[in-house]
Structures are given as structure tokens and as C-alpha cells.
Amino acid sequence: MGQFQALKMGFLEQFVHNGRALLGHRSKAILLSGAACFGAVLLVQRVNSRREQKKRILEAQRRREKSFQVAERALLEYKQSHPMTNALYILSLSLSELTKQLQESALSPEEVFYTYLEKTLDVHQKLNCCTEIILDSFEQLKTIGSCKRGILYGVPLSLKENLLLKNHDSSCGVVKYLNQPADDDCVLVKVLKEQGAIPFVRTNFPQALLNYDCSNPIYGQTLNPHNLQKTAGGSSGGEAALIGAGGSVIGIGTDIGGSARIPASFCAICGFKPTAGRLSSKGCKSIFRGQKTVLSTPGPMARDVDSLALFMKAEICEQMVFLDPTTPLLPFDEGLYQSRNSLRIGYFDCIEQTPTSPSMTRGVQEVKALLEQAGHTLVPFTPVRILDMAELMSKGALADGGATFLQQLEGSPVDPVLHAQVAMYRLPICLRKVLAFILKPFWPSGARLLRSSAGVGSAAGVWKLHASIEDCVNDTIAQWRRLNLDVVLCPIIGPAFNFCYCGKLMSMVPHSMTYNLLNFCAGVVPVSTVTEEDERNLCHLDKGGWFNRVLKKAITGGVGLPVAVQCVALPWHDELCLRFMKEVEELVKKARKDEELK
Image 1 (cartoon, rainbow, N blue to C red):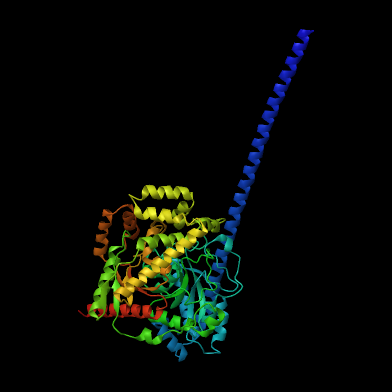
Image 2 (cartoon, one colour):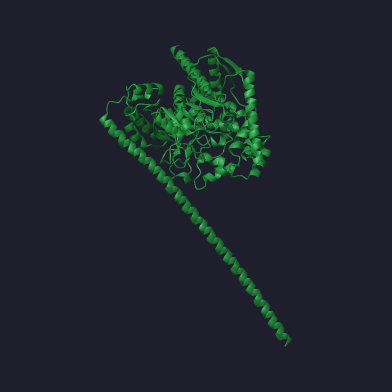
């Protein structure tokens, strides 16, 4: 009996053990099946998401192509009924000359509009600089002649795509913003229409706008009009390329870190960043809405400085202040712009620990000599706390460590121009800080970039950041006052980079972004072209570290590309800045004529 009981108990224990083992295997099987199902669901979602991305991108591309086709048909019809238009003459006119001819009826709005439309379609085929032809412009053109009013009466005008336009998308290169047409025009466009201008084309930009290349997954890469192997710059690269190639006489870009000035430098045009607040930003779309540390501002881009000034006069009016009461009722000071009194000018041709290309250094030195010959006083100027400001700029723009930037890109393929930036923002913040500490002795600029990209971390950090920026503004103004300066002459980023290097060289932005942080007005004027000697002098960059060598690769092959200088003035001294830019422009033109006569 005892043996039987023992046998029975053994059998039961074995049964329980086998049962548990069976249940364990079943649990594992269930878990594995569940995981497989969950993975399959994620895979299906990802596939569907990518299909939806492609669908929305293709729809946007088809809308763009349709707008070009409609424009081409309208152009053909016009040319058949108006075969005698003097296109070359119209395209040769400056904005001031063009407005005069239109006001005097020497030219009609129709012949000017279709001349620029034809040129734009031709330029776009070569440079891929436009996102759409604004088909509403054909209706506006039909009614424009019935009321000859406004400073810009009959002038066709180009717009960067992030400026809101009623019934049109402003995608900023981000897929989730497609198929979300605006309810109304931005304030600047409303004012321009009242001034008689005809917005007729929108232009390209880099994905998410926080890069100075010009490519996005929706509309592709924009090419430089002076060298198709180079970028047009960004973020207002489409504007710069179109204007630089003659497809527009005046356009609007936006500038948060050089976004109008850098592409102007790359494409041999003039670009102006007014004091933030001088022009209305209402309706200028940004993926960082609410970011107020580094201020973005719209600004004009054109072939000459007088065009920039004329644009400012057209925009700064009672209607702009009525539509956006946050802008000051501060009329354009024509007397200051037209003055030709001698100036006291601070100057520098390089920035500490930030390499400047040989051609840009030469550009500043040559303009300095011309200004001295013209009777102006040039004073050496060292930017105050420039390295601190570089870090503050990055911290302000990426106060959350880049989290918002990455969130905005969700649902969008990432463009190659952003790969370097995105890779950095995806690093854990603690790892960025550790890497910055390790790199500091060997690569100071890279260490600063990593450290500042970690953001501020808290509300107290934001307050501390803003206090530091206030100190930089006060210290810079104090230095200007000690030296009794009117304006400053300095380099801008350039010449135009090879593709996909802008994201790798974000440490270059102190050349331009400093004046966004300080909220000083600044503009760019083309003054020269890259010479063979400039190209040979690139060998000096080999003596620096990794950053210098990357810069050399970015600008190699630039012979013949534009060289520009930057002109800067204190906040709300926009007319003085433009007057200084005009002085530089005139002196350079005179020097060229004198050289040709020798």
C-alpha cells in the first residue's frame, strides 16, 4: 500500500511538472505570438504611413506641375496676341525704373507680368527654385489696371513659401503641413497687394527652415544660378536663386539666422534683415511657433539696394500698423537713406575660432580700402563675446534640446541636408554634454555646438539665458558707443557651398546669427567674385582642425562665384544700414568702371 501511495504521488508530481512545463511553453508561445502580431501591426502602420507620405508628396508635386502648365498656356496665349513685347528691356530695369515706367504707362502691368512669368518658368527648369505659380495672380492682373495706385503698382513679386497665402499650403517642407491651406494672406502680402504689387510665384526652402542649404523631400534641391554644382543657400534659397537668375525683380524672404543674407551672399544679390518688429511677422509660418529668444523677421531680397529701400517704403505704412498693431508707426526716413555724410565704420574680417574663407576676408579688406578712399573713417572692431553669443544662439533656438524639431519631422522623410543635424538632436542630452566635455580640448567649436544643442533644461534656465542675451546686447552697444561707431562692416558666410555641407557646418552661423540674437539690422551686398588666388589660398585651411578641413571641402571649386560683405547697424537704424549698403554698392560699381577704363 505504501509503495502504491508513493507511486501515486510520484505520478501526480510528474503530471504537475509536465503541466507547468506545458503551460510555460504555451505562455512563451502566446507571448511570442503577441510580439509577432504587435510587430506586424507596427510594420503595417509604418508601411501605411510611408504610403500616405508619398501620396501627399505626389499630390503637392502634381499641384505644382499643374500650376506651371496653366501658366505656360496663359503665357502662350498672351504671346500670340502680343508678339512685340521687349522682354530684354523690361528685365534690365531696376525696381525703381520699372515702377516709374508702370506709373507713367510707358509699360503695362500685363507685359511686365508675362515677361517675368516667362523668365521664371525658364529659370525654374534649370534651378528648381519655385514651389508653385500663384494662379490667383492672373485674376489680380485683370483688375489691376482699373486702379493705378500704390508704390509698387503692376510689379510682379515673388514670395518664400512659408509666407501664408489664402487657399495655399505653407508646408515648410514638412509633410504633415500639406493639405492645410491658409485662411488668409499674411499681413505683408495684404499690404503689397494694396500697394499694387502682384505676387505671382512662391519659392523653395530647406526642410523645416532651420538650415542654410535649400532642399526638402517635397520639392527637391534648388541649384545655384552661378554654378549648378553648388547650393543656393537657405533658408530663403529659392528666392535668392530666382532673383539672382533674373526671374524676379523683388521678393520676400525670412531671416532667423542669416536665412535671407546667406543665400543673398551665395547668389550675388542684396538681402536685408530689418530690426525684428519693423515689419509685420503676422502670417509668417515657423515650425517653432512661440520661440522668442532668437527672433525671425521677414525681409526683402533684390538685385540692388534701392529696391530693398523701395520695398521697405511700400510696407511701412498705416495699413501695416492697422493690420498688425504690434508693429511701430515709424515711417521710413527717406532723408537718412539719401544722406551721404561721412561715416565712422567699425570693421573686422574674421571671427575668433570660426574660419572665414579667403575670398570673404579679401572682400571685407577691399571694401574697407574703398570706404577709406571715399573719406569714411574705418575703426578696427572686435565683436564682444562672440563665442558666448554663438552658444546662446543655439541654446535659444533649441531650448528643448531639439525635441520640437524632431517632432515636426515625424511623418516626413528626412532630407539629406538635415542628416547631420537630426543625428545630433537624436543623441540623449546627457550624452551630448559628456561628448562636449570630451571634445572641448580638441575641437572647441564642435564642443560648444553639442553643449548648446542640449538646450536650457528649465524655466530658470530660460531666464538665465535671456539675462545673458541682455548682457551681450548691452556690452555690444557699449562698445559701439566707446568707439563712436555708426555702422559695422564684416564678413558673411560664403562663397556658395557644395551640396550637403551646410548641415555639417552649423558652427559657421555666428557670422550671421549674431545679429538675430542682438536684434541688430543687417544686410548683404555682393562686391566681387572668387579668384584663382582665393582658391589657392584654401590650402591655409589645412592648418586648422577638422572643422577647417570640412569648410575647405565645402567651398572648393568656387572660382567665379559671388563674394559679398555684410553691413550692420544698431536696432531701429534700418535706414542707416540701407544707406551704408548703398554706399558700398556705389563704391564697388565705381571701382569696377575705373578698372575697365584702365
